[in-house]
Length: 264
Image 1: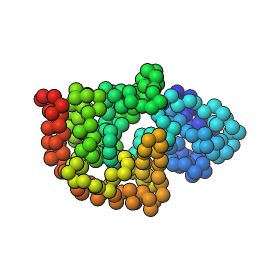
Image 2: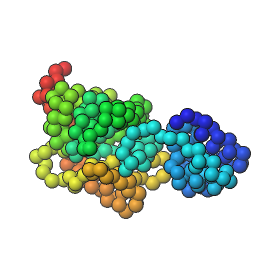
Image 3: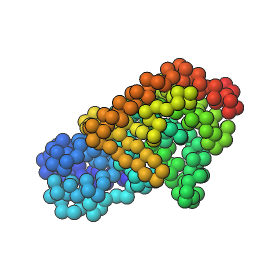
Image 4: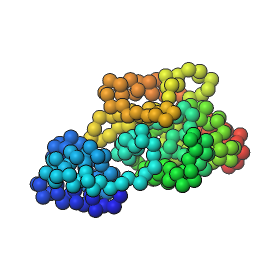
């Protein structure tokens, strides 16, 4: 989004004599959310824009002139995508595919190629661009802190063929070796484990409670109930305790990439 909308919000807030925190409290939002909107990094939801209008007595200006978010994600993932960009800590569990922020472009396209109903080339291009934009959070050398827990099936399923898989796995290996992320593998020989039912993402923030996100075929949900999030965290920790240590996980990923044809 251009920053005209964010600049106008900032002007109206200051004209009302409010700090970001005071506006956030009045609009039932977080201060970081307000900050992201003013800086042009986020597009508020329609409901957020209505609350901002009410808090600033601006009629329906903020909700009527809401800019369009050009990102291409499934509707059920939009809330999780926005939270992902604000998170201080992210813990991913992948059951079938590599987590989106780790995916290489060729791996993404291989995943999209089997969607039903099929995506057009234009739609696929937009999704790839959006997913690559999401992965830019890893260009920051420190924040967010990212852990990935990968079911070994993610490594063994030849998405896109051997060459694509070798490239994808080595991309994760390099992220781990650079100390940007941690990745642990849950070996197939383990059998059942507490996260076997679906993929899951846990996110922590500096100024709001943690959330969990789970996803299945054509559906996904952000969970913010403290009791439920705590259960997800417990399941993640239990599964992590059964995963291979970091060095052994790296060795398995390297060996798997070599089986796919990668050579150092």
